[in-house]
Length: 189
Ligand code: GAR
Image (tube, rainbow, N blue to C red; front, top):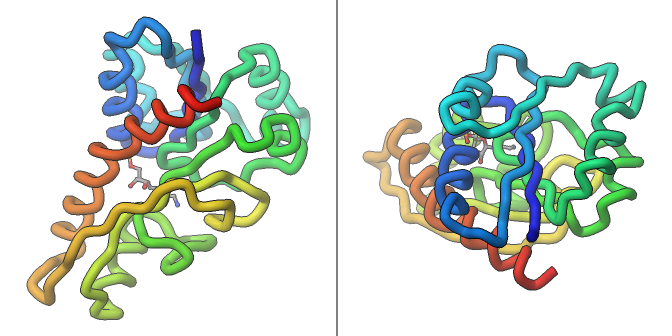
């Protein structure tokens, strides 16, 4: 049995999509969803999906090492960041080499870095009159959005596209590819 721990702090639509994708797979389980936002919609989704979820604060993540201890106890095969915006602590990255992945809603190395998340990314893409955008699934290192790229998928955009329509196109790519790539990594590892 392979197990996944997810980190999320937003709406959690990717978490829900991943949970549903693996629901009927007897070999892969979602052990827990960890969130640094007490009121994040993802926690509500976990209740509805009957998935274990935990909230943690800055102190337990960066100072007291509690999240790292929990992860060590859970011993996940893969840690998946699905809309999680805090930087992962050094020791945690050391403990799980090549086992932490993130999804970013753009074609890295473009439109990455601190503050580049959600609609901020799509807004910048639109302002720069890009003709394409997409998703990047990558390993996590100590810098925002800089770890080795695992997979990218692209979508075309036209001048008529709005920030909202760009977001929709990117989301469609996330829903289509993220669970599939997670599965591939788990089968390989
Ligand atoms: C996703 O679009 C993901 O790519 C993005 O947050 C969104 C979460 O949506 N992540 C980043 O911007 C990371 N820099 P969700 O909560 O509905 O899954």
